Structure formats: structure tokens, C-alpha cells
Length: 432
Image (cartoon, rainbow, N blue to C red):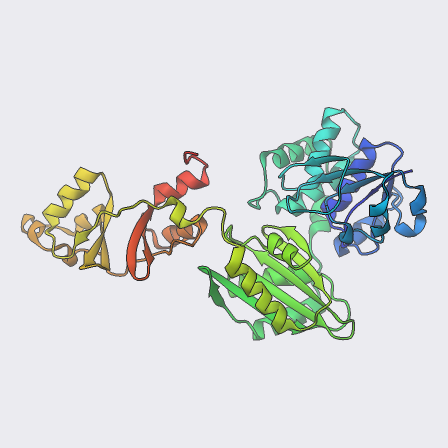
């Protein structure tokens, strides 16, 4: 018997990947964990006659000859299938878009860094010219949209967009997707959000604004991920963590959301035994000591969750500067000679201002060209540290309408990053 299965707390990408895999492997049995995402549970309740799926209770594990695992690569995230990992005669096929180290040793694997796992399966269905019904196309597109944030998450790839277009051609229904991807938000969720906002705290870690919120919940509360996302937006932080402890059940749910490329919360949650993506992650812990969990999260962010590129990788150095008593006509000559649009102004070794070509518009008389640069320079200088991310630099430039940021460490200028440097990075135009 060939079985297709996926991870606990099944989301739309996981469900879509299971159904897509049954098309690729005819005769295979789709098996879902008991714990399903609330939106997935609602979708299945309406479509259960069209999408017949079973649970582990319907199986005799000894009769499984081939196991197809989708959207996960760790045994402990499967539902009651750990005993299969010791079977030497079991064929295992793995489809996944997560590149974290797993413990499922597959005989055959399809592993690519797409925004959603179902994208890989849809591409294969297209290659093999498999028939896809409108209901299946709708489900597959829901999986792509959920895991890519409607194709807007940074993890989204061209393959995801091409797969989405292919599914729309096969009559995927966006109205149905919009209905089932709309998160449940009721009185319980409002109450949790209100309590989180009452205790909201913000801190800076590695240049990012982070909020770690701890609270106790009783019983099951759906859509806590939605609450954490709303919390992050309301308190205006780069990264938000909700630590929800349930002392009666002796467990702790950690839900993380990130809006920056400098903190991969999926990788961070994997360090806690959970999983996720760069912008969204979660972990279920047996510890109910929220302070200990919060301290561990801070350590992980400080220790290894920086951006793939840092300002120190992009900045220019040494930095051309001018002293604050340099005449403006000399500054103009330096700008022309060096081909710069702006320069940091220093007093001894301290940064005291910035001068740019636009500042020369304030000069109305030729005599003013002999005035020192400190007369016309901008004194409120925005700076950045070498460990921060290119995304943070771009945000500062856009927010304050500036074209360059001095890179400062220990009070001294060690480099400079310009708007052009940031754009070259974001459009992947930097030399290898």
C-alpha cells in the first residue's frame, strides 16, 4: 500500500500537496493528521465528498510499502508514524520546499526553494499532463497563496507565479480561495489581542525592533497566528512572538511573525523543535516557563538569525569625508571630482553632518560658496550599523528621503551605503 501524508496542524499547502501527490501516484491513500488548521478543517467539511482523506486510525502501518511525505522532513512532525522510520523495506519519497536539516531519509526526494511545496507538485503534474479538476486547481492555488502571502512574501519564486497562472487557466476559483483563506477572528481572538496590547513591550535586537509577548490561555483558541500578525502590525515592530502557555495541558505554543529579511523566524522556530518559513513560524513546547522560552528566543536572535547579507557586505570604504570648516566651493569640487552626490561631514573624527548636492540649492550668492560646509550641512544625520540588513537601510532611506547612510561602529564612520548599493542588492545585480 502506498500512503501520502504530511505534518500536524495541516495548512493549505500541506493539504494541497497531499492531494496533488495522489494524482502523481495513482492508487495512493491520502492520510491527514488529526490536528488541522481551522481553515483547512472548514474547507474539508464542505469538500469531504470530493476530497476523501483518512487518518492513521484507518491504516495498518505494517501494510505500508511506500510512504510519500509532503511539506515536512521530520518524523516527529508526522502523526503517529514514528515506528515506520525503522523499516528498512519501506520506500520513502519526499517532496518539500524547506531546506532545514531533516531526519527522514528518503529514497527519492524533490527539494527546491519555492514559496510553497505544492508548486513543485503542480509543475510535475503539468509536465506529466495530468488532468486537474477546478476544485483541485482551487485547492492547489490556495496552498500557493497561503504560503506565499498571495505571492507577496520574500520567499515567493517565479515558479510559484507560473504555477498560480497555470491553475487559474484550469479554472481555480479565487472567490472560494478568498473565503477560506479569510482568517477566523471572533471574541476569543479579540480578547487575546487586547491583553497582548495591554502588555506590549518593544526592544532592539541586532538592529531590529522585536516584541516578545507572554500570556496564559485556557483551552483551545483558534487563529492565534492571525492575532500575532495583527499584534505585529499594531505595535509596529519588525518581529513579533506570542508565547501562549496552557498550564492545565502543560504546554506552550510559540507563534512568530517577521516582516524583515534579517530574522528568519522559521529557522528560529526549528531551533525550538517547530518549523515554518522566513516570515512565519511556530513551535509547540512542553515547557510552560514563558520567561525561559523568551530568553531562549532572544539568544537565538542575537546568535544566528541575521540577514543573509549585512550592511558590512555592501558598504563602501574607506569613506570620503570633509571637515566641517571646508569651504562650500571646495566641497563642490570634491563632489565633482569623486562623482559623489553627498559626503559625511566630520569634526576631528566625529560625524557631525551630511552635505549633498541638493543642499547647494540654498546658496543664493557667490559669496556663500566661501562659507564653511557646516553652515549648509544637514545636522540630523541618520546612520546604520554594520550588522543591520539591506532591507533596514532601504526603509530608512525611503522614510527619510535620503540617498546614503553612514555606517557607524563604536562612534566612528567605517563605511557608507547608498541608495544605489541597496538597489543593486535587491535586484541581485551585485557581482559574485
